[in-house]
Structure formats: structure tokens, C-alpha cells
Image (cartoon, rainbow, N blue to C red; front, top):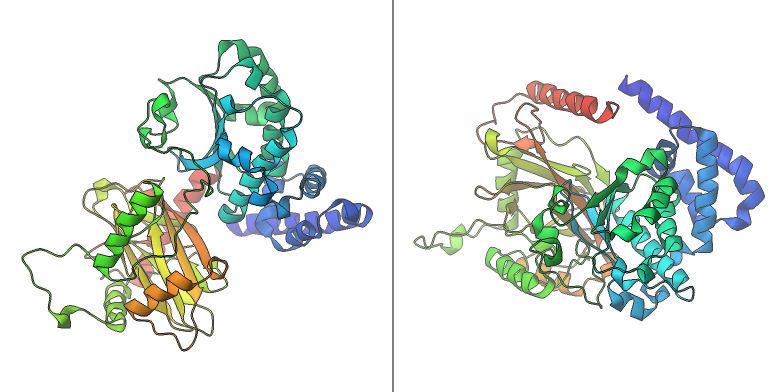
Length: 486
């Protein structure tokens, strides 16, 4: 069944590409950005996102692609940058990414009170929306987003139906599959009529994604830690610019290296400097017990450390999905799976494989450094070699779908050393453009759905066949859930 679905999907993608090239590109090539046309031929996920949104009807998908590609060229979407947006608009703080909803979807905030209807500035505001969405899409590749329309302290002069319609078009046509939901907070009653029109723009398929919430209801969608005080939350975040408020992606490269005590110092400095949601380097060692003295011989070399990790993990089944990056192949590709609290503490495995001819330095960062222990969190990988990284929840803290991990990697010169001091200096000097980044979400698996991506103490006697059976059982049960009609 799964094989047939994959074959059908491949046929639809192939047909869409062939027909778009033959029926549209040949006649309208000047209306499209060549980079978009090229990406369409190479990125299966991009083609699939349009197909799924149009219920796999190729004719409708082609019309949608045509409209979307013309818009992308008109707005020069591939070339949008901070310099494309007026500085005053970035400083205003009316549109930005910050935090997550309860399902782990990124929050896209639109503070309506800062928007004044003005034809002179409407195009710049549209470009700001496009800038954020394109930035997010390139980094997250299809992961849904929740739009937060904060209408508190809003008057009629802030209600711009053309702007609202543009935002809806972004998700209906230009960024299909990205919309999780639109949460309208504290909408004044006088705007009820306006939002009846908005519902008609969304259409019957998407209108169910529109959620209206008061201060008493907003926590159904977003927990207090990501809600500002005026919504009844505890998030101390205050918008400022520069730099861009893009907390998941602000990943400082300057830090104190892979030694446990230094990593912890770095985390504290980053927390104070960047706010609670900035990605922090997680500690790669458990806190030492004060009464124990650690001798120099107990400070293991990187090779010994890797050997210890290997000895702990070699009997476990490796994650099956793989993200193929230019420097590292990373497994799993998208999600780290942990057991539920009821099933006991679980550990999960990340496997990094160096696909270059040089040594690759890497480090692991997380949005919740207080929750996790990662070993190793800051090290290097030899050409062609693989490194197993163990991630374990700390204490009784719960894994959350809002938690994220970031793998950062950069190629080192052959002459570079890989000790703590050398790695520290390397990360201070490496250009941001040379750093590969890949993000992983967290997922809690119920105890009734075993999964070989989890590592549990005492499970080392499990045979490969048993592990594979468990994985297939989990994959089948998840597919039945995900693929069932809603």
C-alpha cells in the first residue's frame, strides 16, 4: 500500500513538472524567476506541497504554480533581505516570528495595533510578510506555522482588508501547507462583519483553521510561557531591532568550547544576552558531584569519549530516516523520539556522518538547555566517519513538542587541531556563511507505540530483528494515524 502511494506520488510530481514546463514555462518564461523554475524540477517536497493543497488535481496545481511563481518574481522573493525592508518598519515590531504553540508550530505574530492603513506603505508591509515567510520556509521546509493576529488595543484605522487578504493569499497560494491555524486574539465586536468577509476568502477548506480567542481562551492554543503578559502569559520577551527577532535562528557562534564547565558558562551568558528562547549549547557532561575529586586521568580524550558513546549505542538500532546535508548526513531527518513519562526515562540517538574529505566540527544546541544532556555536544568528526550522539532528558523534566535541537557544522582546514582550545577558536572565527545548520523537533511516543529511535537503559539485549519489528510496528501505527481522513 505504502509502495503504491509512493509510486502514485512520484507520477503526479513528474507529470506536474513536465506539464508546467511544456504548458507554462515555454509561454511565460519571462514572468518567472529561473531559480523557481529550477527548484521546481529538483525539490520534490515543493511540488508535493502544491499538489496536496490542490487535492492532487494536476490542472489545479498548475494554475496555482503559475499564480505563485508570477507573484514570487513580482516581489523578487528570492532576493528579499533586511535591506529590502525600510528600517522603521523592522523597528516597529508589528510583524515577527517568536515562540511556539502547543503543537510545536512556530508563531508568526502580527500586532495589528501597529498597522495604520496607508497606501504609501502597504507594499513595504507586504514585502515584510513575504520576507519572514520566505526566510522561515527556506529554513524549516514545510513545517507549519501559526499566525497570531493580536488585535488588542486595535481601532478601525488599523483594519486594512487589502493587507489581510494578502496574508491569506500567502498561505492559500504562495506558501501552501504552511498554515497550521490563524488565531484571532481579542477581536473588537465592531469588526465581526469584516471577518465574515475574511472567512469567505479562506474558503470552506481553510475556514476551520480560523480560531477566535479571548484572554480566557488563548491558552487552548499557546501555553503561558510563549504568551505576553497582556494575554495572560509569562513570556518576558520584548521586541527590539536590530538584530532580527528570529529566536530559533539566532545561533551565536562565539562560545567557550566543548569542555563541560565552559559550555555551562556559555549557556548562562547566552541566556542573559539573548533571552530564554535563544538556542543554547547544551552541557555535554553531567554536573560533577562536589565531594568527588576528578583527576587528570579521568578527563578523557575525544577518541576515548567517542569510544564510550559507541560502546553504549552500538547494540541499538540506528534511526532510519536521513537528512543529507552538504557536510553531514544527519539521522533522524526531522524528529527526535522520546518515551512518555509513564514509560520511564528514555534516551534517543542522533547519528552524524561526515561526507566530506575534511574534518567537520559540530555542536548541538537546543531551545531548552536545562532539560537535556547531550553527549558529545561539541566535537569533530573525521572524514567518512560517523558519530553517535546520545540525547537524554534531565531529571523529571518533560519533553515538549515545542523543544528544538540545532545541529551546527563547519568544515575545518586539514592543519587545524581538534582539541578544546582549537575548537573554541574555530567557532569564533568561522564565517556564518560556512556553517551548515539543521533543526530537529521533539516528539513523545506513547508507551503503547514502541520505537527503536529511543534508547532505554537495560535494552541492550534486544536483537536487530526485534528492533526492526518494533520500528515497523511504530511506523505502521503512526501512518494509520497520520493518513486517516480528518
